[in-house]
Image 1 (cartoon, rainbow, N blue to C red):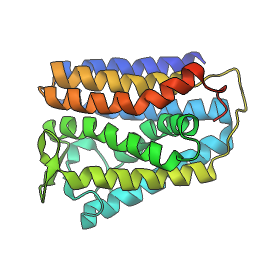
Image 2: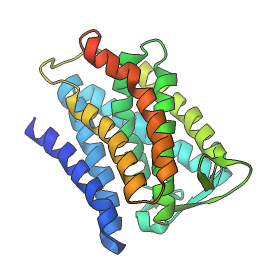
Image 3: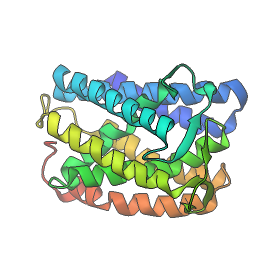
Image 4: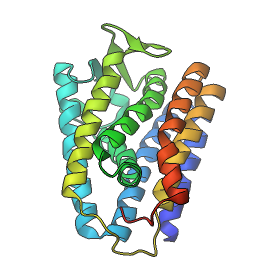
Length: 250
């Protein structure tokens, strides 16, 4: 339990430090944030749902995200034309090894939220969450030179460097991943004494950190306000379930 919350605090601390450093330290913080975040979420899934759940989640999310990202890099579908910079480390088929772990880090808390907030629409609720998260993430990573786009057609709101096709791709790919995870992963706690607090903290910190970072550090005030508002509205059904809904059985 202590290690679980230390992992969450480490992710928050690393993200707070992110806008305060530069160069190789910034790169190292980017890598550490993702790997620590993904490991913490997998650890939570192991503690609460058991080894089969944790192993299945890890393998399915890794394989799915690597596959869809490889397709994206090679063909431009479904996200648009983009390429990753080598600063993100070792690559598989042009996709940094880091990238599937980034999917893992946020898809887990979003899956838990979707199962509680929209039990019959998990694929849609979870997919929308991944799309909104990427609206925060992409401008930040483009600023840092971690990947770049070839803009074709309309761009995402308040970000002329990123095509709108990327958001459509994230919605499509996110719905596919959430549908698959919801299908193959069992429901019901193994240890009811461990709550969803750790993934919830990471999820809500993603909102707070995205707003604060974009407005006060990354010079993307409009993105901070717009995406922050979308994310807050998106989370309202989950907040309502946490406050008034049934016990957590996701």
